[in-house]
Image 1 (cartoon, helix red, strand yellow):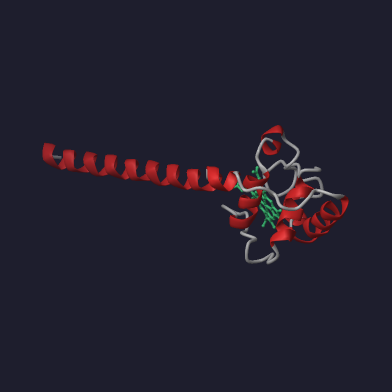
Image 2 (tube, protein in one colour; image 1 turned 120 degrees about the horizontal axis):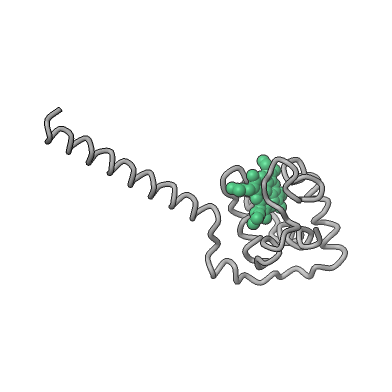
Length: 128
Ligand code: HEC
């Protein structure tokens, strides 16, 4: 192999590796980052017994098949709603994740039309 051919191949490989790093970094960021503005959204629905019960009913119907009864990562979805890391998030951040989805997590903004119902889910997840 000539030196210039080797250089060309080496350059192509470096460029490819760089692009691969960038793509994985960007998709990783997108999956888990909630903007400060979205994190700051205030929960307009009081976490009273009625809201939590409505959230639980919806969770049982739409979320349990992936997140399991207890939402503790023992089921198909790796998220653990009972963990310190999860509880440290704001209501706005959890609400945004439910709205937008990411990876295998579906987006629910269009599927669950009432805003209030998605806030009921946030209120229920807080009790796990
Ligand atoms: C098809 C399976 C599936 C269904 C149904 C599903 N989820 Fe998820 N969910 C996931 C997966 C997988 C993740 C983790 C995504 C990742 O790690 O990339 C996740 C992540 C989440 C997170 C983020 C957790 C964190 O640690 O911040 C929340 C909140 C959530 N789901 C709520 C819900 C709610 C509420 C419902 C029902 C309305 C629901 N999910 C239905 C698969 C599902």
